[in-house]
Image 1 (cartoon, rainbow, N blue to C red):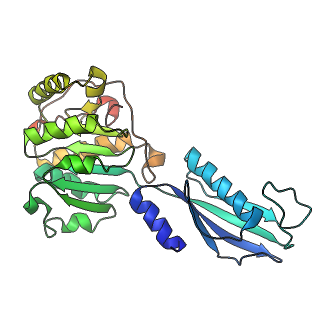
Image 2 (image 1 turned 180 degrees about the vertical axis):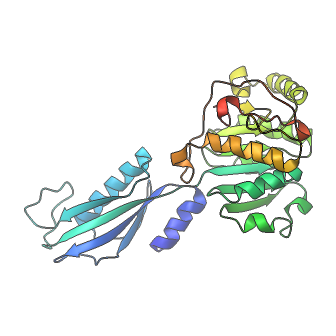
Image 3 (image 1 turned 45 degrees about the horizontal axis):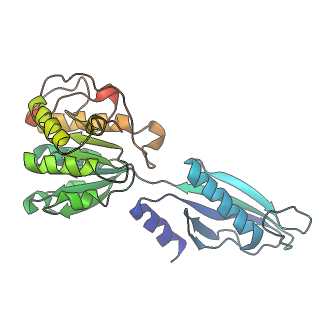
Length: 303
């Protein structure tokens, strides 16, 4: 696998990485300027020259991955027998400058339900640098003609037609944001229950619904064995304060705005570990399908 395919694979898998490029060579060196290597947490693809040069680059790249660094950096290595190197000596005699560029991991947002509100929300989010997963049990809602302007956006879009949305939940990456707005309250409940049982932490769980629906769900989730702390991870109603209205597009704007508040400005292109909030606030005027135009503490959900 070459470096370009490796970078694309990491992006598809939602995994961080670093692209290492030989930016400049003075004198003799094992690789020419332009040689590239991709580094992930546990693998490498390609080569920038082997030996201490490459080992040091890999080590630094993994430090950047571990710290979540988003800024590129330049490193210089002198390949002569007098340099003190951690991973052995290289005696080529030249000087190599390496550019290390973090590969952004796009935050994942999974929309369960592509009805009127879900479709409008998908249209908005498709213009953002995110991984957008669209899930519905109704094939007509996922028709490619209907979703043409969603698929053509900036987002990496995945379409999942399945009767069991829980199967998609199980495959979500760590820190993914989940928005539950299906056509069936029983399906909504099943997804809420499954989301709380996932082993990997989610960035947030949002549920469309009225206060009456949420009160019923809270009781059912408690009967199913979920603790109050776990149930509080679900935000219901969802939306951004001050954006009111019952039109699907207005609701979608309110929900998208709340979701953006959950993604720190520095993390709106890379991955996010999810926003946390200790405030839930009070619901404002209910909108279509019971979604309220507010978000708890200006953030998407609680963890």
